[in-house]
Image (tube, rainbow, N blue to C red; front, side, top):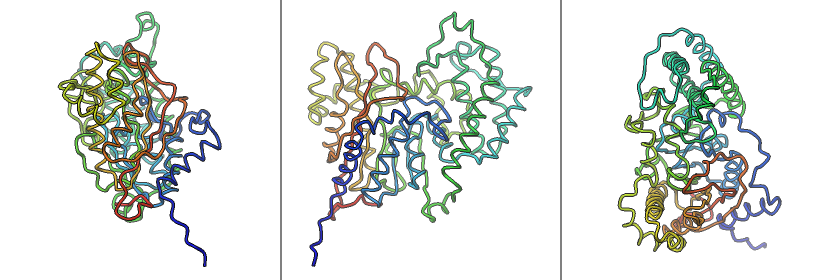
Length: 458
């Protein structure tokens, strides 16, 4: 009689699968030849979007190692890359983000219009926007960022979009308008920050908002077609859950707002911020202009208008946005992360930078505390991380993250290295600089009371 072979722990199985991909092709995780984004991944140019093929491969390996995986969680959902790759694989998804623009974009990806509805609404808006009476809107910097003719055309588009029904179609059109605004404003498209074009460039530019919107909405209607060709018809709401179809839940707010997911996730998959927004990627600045035109009631959960009080308001509420009492967190953070303690020695005599780093890591650690509460026992965390130079020295974010998570009883499974190819990052600035590589840090929550051989459904 054959002796039963011991079951391979799911963490070891996952690590072996990841290693086999690297052994077969050292450049596999780079996805340098994956091409431009298509389908719903291409609706809007959000900063620092993750590579769909990369997150998809990670999900495939996770599900192969732990077939019980049913739900994915992204506490920094951003443009919704993980969301789409999850639902394309029949996995339910829970996501949060502090940026209302991110939540709107993800809602459109989770619940897009049917192709015929998208084309019908696009034609209706383009026809109506030619001579519709548009209401004025006022906001800080309006006349700096838009020439009068562009502003009037955007207001006409806004008025025409507001009359479209149903809401899912209208939300799709708002995303098209947001991309149009990005392209026709006086802010340079070469950076995600609000930076006005040089005077000579402004004089020579002739942006046409109606023509640009037409180009964007036609392209996005084609992306809707591609989405449905891949995704297919699906039941909705309660019928979807009963049928075992993916269910998407989106909540607007900071990661440490103590949201409670409707059910625990088996996988936490995200790309958390690499640092505070002032020195890395100001997602709020990038969204400031589009959010002025979008009807708040059409954004899931609405949004607090004070988030648009200044161009930096959203970013100031993000991780590391406030440096108040940052120094008080030092002892606790250094005890959790020896790598952080060693790095801070490089900042002696640079108190401003020191406070920025401490404030970010303080909020970063708190965020993980809240996020991990939504991960099931034995579940995995896949964190796509980059490292930059701050104060002339590389901030060891990967090691700091691993140590912070180990202090919360998470176990290291693997670290996968990749070279950056098309990921859109912030331009170099005086405090930090961009990266040429990324790491995918894979961690596992404490296993349940049984043998821990598989990630548990909750």
